Length: 470
Length: 141
Image 1 (cartoon, each protein chain N blue to C red):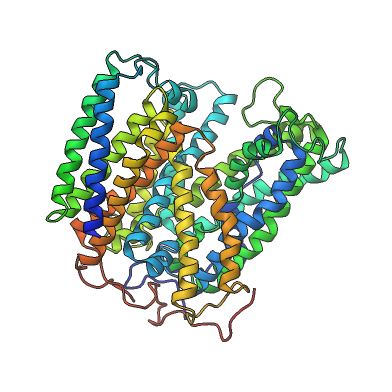
Image 2: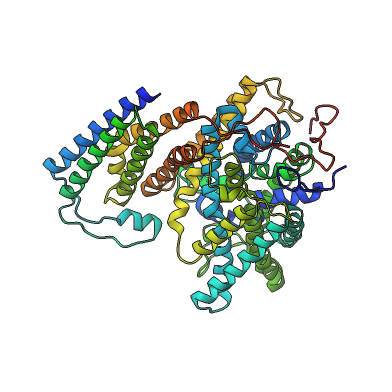
């Protein structure tokens, strides 16, 4: 029935095994615990453990379950852009897509830059060599993306094996050689509870983000309403213990909480140093490989998901038409992928850290519109077929989402005033862009059917016989 | 929504006019350390002093006010253009605030007109969604 052939929409739909989908989701939401070091060093180990255990229920789970429910109801290419558009109209759908897309354009370059920075730590290389290597990395993974999300999925699966094995090794050896309690000290010495929490909260939020990302690929996966929600929920069950156990084991083996940092330098401790302490150069080497692979995985995964909103906006005649073309052979939005790759190859040239300013703002605003759309659809379309439905009444969902909104708003103010204002600039680009593109291209009307590729027989994906409680 | 946007645009313009006059008359001491906080927080660029900063920013504010009034006048007939103009002015002003010696104070000063101008953009965007005829139906299969 489904041979993955390209349809009239132009996108090729592929069969994705659950393990591949989970690997893709793990890439987008985790890809290693690197980054946790900063939370330990700024908030204190005990508070870090509490945040890692509590925050997912206030931050990650709302987005993950929202993505599962709406992904099962509206499994359309473009994902959350479509959900917001259906709930709140074209303007707000565009805002969500635009803000998220913009943040991803910068984000993906960061992962390549981090990889290059790490390599520069081992080898002395002139700037142009650094850039050339980065450009090569970008081209390779852009090519993989253009070949198709099935191949991308396999590559990401292999990458995550390289990421997970060293951390599992660290968990085993770290607990075996534990010297200190993971809860001591509870908060960073010299800080108040809220002060300590504020320092690590932004990183913890970042580590628990990304659950909406895979939704943009829904139109290219067979039975997305089955695959993606399940992958989401399986992944949550993996990521939370992964973060908690790796962080606990790493810290317990080494201690010295105030030295934990991703910045490196004299006396700094990170997971690689923790690995060296418990397993010598071999484990440290494995973790270095995990760091590099993890960043490359993040780049590849977000190049895949992050290129889709521009493509879908273009198909909806709300963006440059150039972006809305599919590869004639591979059935992927190759121009959108290429543009993102080329933009990244420019961004890795210099220090673009000032652009990361807008990242948090854009993502927080996009997230808030997605959760708002969730509630609006529950109210506006209560009978929309939801193959997975969060087992909570709408009023309870609203109550549960309140802390999420509070955290998102708090995040806007955590980085300083220059960051705050810079972020406002990013957010304001949304309405300006809509006014320009809508005036120029006018948009399209969407019938109330799914924008999902049909299979070779020309039929839409069959619904599952009964609502699934995953 | 156009009417609401127009009212907000006029009010924003008046606020900016007030800010400009205040800068020119009160001449606050803002010459030193432009980009200082920016460099401290974002580690890019070099701080600099700007002689006559109060006069310069006051004049810029008056120009911004004038352009905002132009935008307000355009709303009834060319509201998309007006919306882009007003939002872009807001973005430029935000950049100026971020580069100023005291962005926190700048945010406080710019908060009201900035928010109003932002709302203008959002209102006019929703208005455009309402009135602009789409071009055909999406290709779905």
